[in-house]
Structure formats: C-alpha cells, structure tokens
Length: 218
Length: 108
Image 1: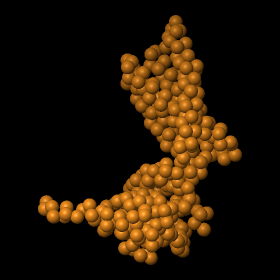
Image 2: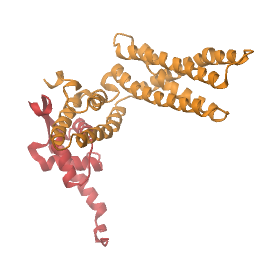
Image 3: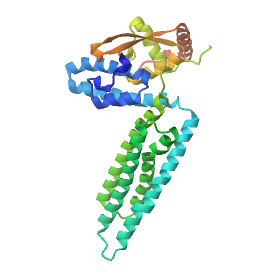
Image 4: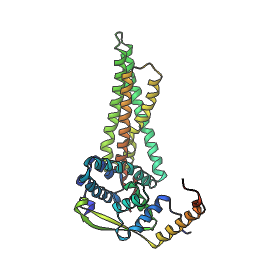
C-alpha cells in the first residue's frame, strides 16, 4: 500500500516532500515521508509557520545523508563513466561558446557602427544562456526517458554540470576585464541558474540510475 | 570483537531503539534522541544509519499498519538483533575504556 503513494499525498510543504521523494532511496522514502507528515501534523496545529520551517530544516539536513548513503553504493566504474560523460559535455559546450557565442560577439564588435559595449556583452551572456538552456532541454527528456540506452543517457544528462565549470572560466575572464556592474550581476545570476541545474542533474541521474545513485533498497 | 565498532551516531541510534523497545519507529527514535542526547537529528540521517545497520544484520525492521495521520503510510518498526546488541555492547565498552579516568576532570 505504502509503495503506491507518492509525494502528492503529503500535506507538508510540497516542494520539500518532492525533494525527499526524489533524493531518498525508494525503500525508505515512504517511511520518511510518513514520519515527516506525522510530526508535521502535530506541529502545524501549534504554529503552521514553525511547522513549515521545521519540515524544511529536516529535509535540507537529510539530503546530505541520502547523498552520502547513495555515494557508498556507486561503484568506481560508474563514477568513471560519469566523469567521461562530463568531459564530453564540457567539450560540446565549449564548442558552442567558441563557434556561436564568441563569433557573434566578435562580428558585432567588428561592425563599423558597433553597438554599445554593454549590448555586446549582454549578447554574449544571452547566447551563453541559450546554450545552457539547450543543454538542459537535452537533459530533461533524456533523464526521464528510461527507454534510451544507458550510454546515451550518461553522455547527455550531465551537460549542465559543465556549464558551471564553463561559467567559472567566464567568471575569471569577466573578473579580469573592465566589465560593467550589470553584466557582472547577470553573470552571477547565470551561475545561480547553473547551480540549480546541477541540483536538477542529481534528480535526473537518480531517474537514470534508479536507486543506485542515492542508495538502493534494503 | 568480530564486527567493526559502531560509529558515534550509530551508538546513539541503537541506544534509542533499545530504549523504545517495540515502539521504535522513525518519529519516536528522533524524539528519543532529542530528549535523551539533547541533540536534534535529521530523520534522513536516522533512516540511512538504520539502513546501513540493517544491511550489516544488526537491525531488523517490520511494517506496521498504515494510518491516516501519516497520509496512509505505514510505520516501520525497528529492533536490534542479537548480533546488533553484541556490537553495541562492544562499542560502548570500547568507548567506556577510552573515557575511563577522564570523568575526574573538574566540571566547569
């Protein structure tokens, strides 16, 4: 019975429950969600706000434990495959940057009536973001589609991880140049999106590897 | 000592299960740790610790009845096996040996 339930049946904060649902091992997630809901029900009668804070704190403190438990379950062979996949994704994203983003920006700069420097840098950021979104769009369906071959899933699903590395490289570039404040802030926002994508990657990988990423059943 | 000694948090969790007896399930274990050890434990940390102990054969679990207050989910009750009890006793004895003599330190 418990195995047929999903996070939607929990009355606690939906997003927090969803995090538990996707990050905990299948064998324990219903037990954990049940415990959280039982205690949340009691706390919510006293103070709904405090109950929500408590729920979120439990979830956020539990996720490292799930990851640690799961990491012990992954063999070094799989970690090696993931690293290779990350390298391939990195190369793809780098080529996108070299062939699309930078070449467009260089063309703009070379124009006789070149646009404002802010516009040029914003164009770069925009194109860079398009690459990131394309990579994420590739990841989502592949991550959730179990019919794809194992190898294809691995190769494509970790692209956004490399966007972050790539972003860090760009960060170095922007730090050493005379860029304005706004492009810099925009870039920082891009990093934040990258981190969110990284978190999403873990969820996609869980879908691909099943319980082998964040722990298998007891 | 046949088994690897239990870690500090494992000792805490096993002690909570022993204290609770037949009523040892996630919420009760978490509250027992909070009351007795005066520390807040994440429910995920408790479950992953129990899962590891179960894989080693030190803990067993059984499902109780599903209840509405848990959204129709069943409680999972834990109990310590004979081997688990031995591992716990050995670990506590080992820890006690290390602490022996230190208790004479003056309290602040």
